[in-house]
Length: 262
Image (cartoon, rainbow, N blue to C red; front, side, top):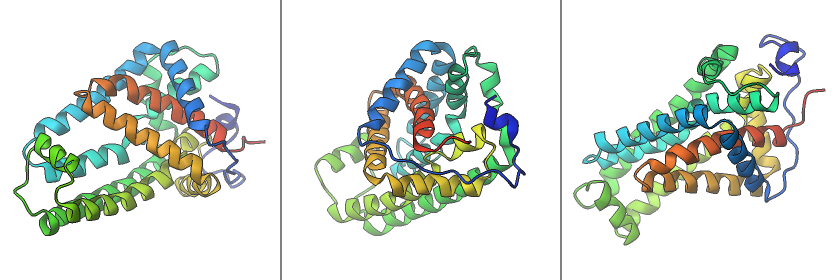
């Protein structure tokens, strides 16, 4: 465990507030390169999580193939809850950073390190997801003028820019929810795992990172969404490789975006 984790506990009143620092606009590409390096060095445990992501994506598509109003909400939830699924990947990167082995077993229960605060954070993102899921259904009911299509039919309508009123409202509202979720989760879980930081400070620290580096964070968000979409469009096979790289890259983003503890 890092020196930070050894010298602090979740109740330590002296634990300093996480301080954001500047990151260059091109930094996200460096994080992805480092994530790829972690993936190559620890392929087996990384692929385990990649297959978990792919399995979830496949399940979402299969179950909601003919109820796409639910699929959009659940797929959005896939993005909102991704940081929790990637905890094991953060731990792999942390262990590699310390020169430890890349065993899968220790990463499966890493959440126990700060379970209470991770649970609080899970509730916050869970509420955001549930509200977005409900809003998604309401938007479909109010603005979708045609019969709800299956997955391929919906995508074809998006490409042809049909139902423009619906698309504008749907993606506009979705952007708001995604921005909230992204803003509070940029470095929250790595903070809670590495420093045993409390949930509120971790979320506020993430928001501080967003406001200090708006351009870099916008590029980071675009890359995350783009890679995730590529993963889904490759019949979920891309998720097997791309999600572990993103998870590892997020750890390196955390390291670079926050001042280290003294």
